Length: 297
View 1 (cartoon, one colour):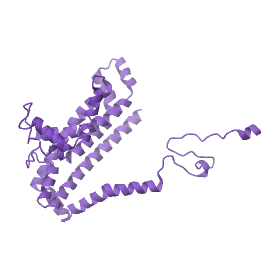
View 2: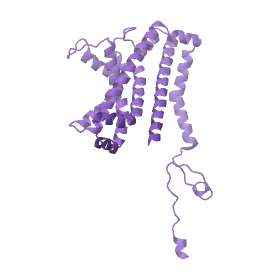
View 3: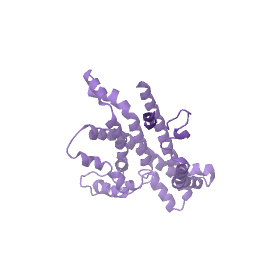
């Protein structure tokens, strides 16, 4: 009996993200517990921070944009100059998103699967657009592809120049979205397919690509959302030519300068709606892809 009394009690079984339950159906000590819960204080702080940083500014912007009513907002967004700026912005941003989806996946593949001298430096350079002020990128691009181009390529005040600028600032999104997935990918399945005689292209198309698609779509969506709101990197190389290279952010600044804040807010809300719809659609598609993979597994 003495040894039984001195025996330490058996610890509760480990659970992942859930509190253990005793015989009474409740958590340890007779209280329901959830590991990692932040409680009311945490929820309050998160709500307060999101309200101050995100919700209140967006609400103020929306109220300003509808100052002249729904018809006034629509007239501001569909004005010829505003519509042209939105078309240029969305069109080039779509091309940039598709381009980065391909090149970003390729770069991530090389960084994860290959070894070469200077790999660490290249990996660090990927994040440079995040740290570099975008106006500096515009100056660099103008020096490289402007009227005094040392390489003989003149992209100043052209849509290809805007595309290069947007591709530069949005490249990391796809690379950093795909890299972790490639690192965690099961190489045994690829080796099994290769042992059965499948070519590299077949292995990539049937084994690797379905796993990467949600990450590629997520990165491309983030790149698109960033591109449609970009200003600094295109302010010099783009030339700000109305109906040709003027993007929506430059049009918004122009409306502020001519004392038309309502028109500027209306176009800003239009950009927000476009970005939200794009991200929502990509999130739904990515979720369906993940569920399909889980069912297949």
